[in-house]
Amino acid sequence: MCGIVGYIGDGSARGIILDGLKKLEYRGYDSAGIALHAGDKIEVRKKQGRISNLEEFIANDPVDSTLGVGHTRWATHGAPSDINSHPHCNGDSTIAVVHNGIVENYVELREWLIKEHGVKFLSETDTEVIAQLIGVCYRGDLLDAVYEAVEKMRGAYAIGVIAAGEPDKIVAVRKSSPLIVGLGQGCNFIASDIPALLRHVKDIYLIENNETVVLTRDQVTIYDKERKEVKRDVFHVTWSAEAAEKEGYPHFMLKEIHEQPGGIEETLTRRLSPEGMIKLDGISLTRKELERFNRIYIVACGTAYHAGLVGKYAIEKFARLPVEVDVASEFRYRDPLVDEKTLFIAISQSGETLDTLEALRDAKSKGARILSVVNVVGSSVARESDDVFYTWAGPEIAVASTKAYTTQLICMYLIALHMGLERGALPMEEYKRILQELLALPDKLRKLLETEPDIREIAWELFLYNKNDVFFIGRGNDAGVAYEGSLKLKEISYINSFAIAAGELKHGTIALIEPGTPVIALATQDALYEKMLSNIQEVKARGAYVVGLAKEGNQEIGKRGNANRVVYIPRCPDEITPVLAVVPLQLLAYYIAKFRDCDIDKPKNLAKSVTVE
Image (tube, rainbow, N blue to C red; front, side, top):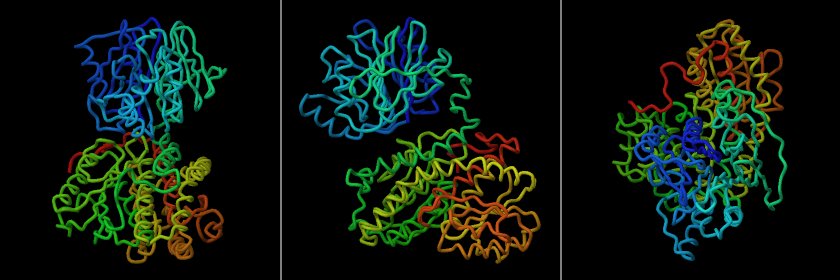
């Protein structure tokens, strides 16, 4: 999920590209670089860290041009470093490439380039493979070379390419990753997103999938996959630069809630073989290895801990292995039973959560095998783990996590299904059925997001109660989702929310329910649906105002005497409802916080990455 910018014109390419990269830094933040056409060669400057590092580096070694491409990186292949930073070049630095996305067959292409063409690689990235491949295909025409190279590439990507021998041209390609073209007077631009260009242009082309673009100073030509010219209407941007970064959403949190179908799709499809089987990115968890473990710990903090609760349910259900979920900040202080027969699963969005990192180190020192689920490539948790399973949520800007949580759930389901199949605990027929249900989730989630106006209305009703206490209740899988919904509400609205397994209400907590108390009741588990209706009756008898959450078709929850308002989610198996059930709770929290005039993206006292104990 990186950001790319390109410019051709009569101005300072260096200044324009650096400015554009700053506007895209939310898309990637571990390194940045720029490639500029300088005479008969391409000059590259790149640096690990923030764009300010790159600016300082260029200031000490200045270069400029009227043609260039730039990149800000969110690492995928290869840890953040100067060498792995983009742009990347071919062997004699006559071709430079910036790239957002992934080339799935890069290992195959890399081996072919080494064997057949004697190519020597400097980095660990798939992007250098693109540059080397285009270099091998180049015979004097950059467009020809790009088309030939793209024919050999598989994956989802957007690229921008310049050649030393063609000082009047940028070639760009979009394949399932964002790409736009900015239209200026005597100049033209490419970028991953509108914010990079708003200072310079308001007219853009929205490039479609499988299209290739050739930019000169005075002309932009779009071609389809068969190299036929495509006509495109100009899109005129009317919003401000700040609004454009959020793509028109008032807050990053709301934008990221709506990005969840895409994040789930990415996390799923990247892990499926052509035969439709789960592949764990090189992680080896064979039956023999799984039989070696006598205990599994899932250890995490906050939202990631709540994902671990769902992960425990999935592993025990599909793999029939006992799992313990622990809060990372407490784990190592109770001297847990950890040895070489322990599988330790760490979950962290940033990969820098210190509590989780210290728990991981403690378990590793005692011989445990470490498997981590993280969103940031090259992070500390990732580097110190034996195996890493990356989520593909993309960068989260809002402090309150949304899309990282749902992609963590997907990762836990994939791990659980793989374990179940390897151990023989899960029949192939059931494995494929659940996998198909997972693949259907993005479209179901898109449908669910269409109910946002109704959820906003419910949030307004809850806000009008002006209560400082809200209760979340649920059973089975719903209990874990209730904890996450409660956390979201307290994080961004500062309301004292409390989550509890619904069956535990009568053991003390129900004493706090009084007339008008808001209760969010999750009833998405068919196996426990009637039990939940009874629990709803218990709080209704004490005067609670109940907002119910249930599957489509389960209408009893909305009948007289049960919930006051109901949100319905699309039907799916009980095991995977958390992916859908959490989204209305995210939206409820968002709108209640908005009505309370809270700073939603940057709530008080919180940070995105918690690097202190």
